[in-house]
Length: 185
Image (cartoon, rainbow, N blue to C red):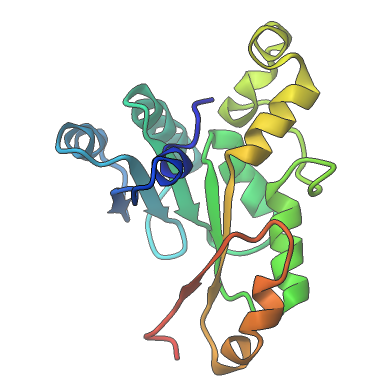
């Protein structure tokens, strides 16, 4: 797994330039890299992506040192895990209405002790290759710490009721950002 290119850019004092996609196309990822984008964002709520296409997007983007983040279809931990196992390094959960929902979202994205993310065997956990986990991260715990430090977790506020609870939502440990759904308001 690569260092999160969005967080890296932010630590350098800059904003990351992120290319948004609603469908799978490897050429667009390559072109985004060539013109200077630092990351790819997938709209999984309104876009058309299969688990296999997300795997390929992450593989190609990571080859250009670009992280992939996604607004997932829903906040269900099983859905989030499916995306994280492909190798994305950021999740925006749609329709976050309360602090409790924001906490469940963060828990689904972060490994223990910071959350309750389940361990999968795909790209998102170096395919569970114990030699890679040991050599690159000092084991599974080291990988979990690296993954958590390189995970962006955001919630999308899309109702007036959720907007009224923005302070409650933003106070959730592990939640780093909120996005607005202005057309939903």
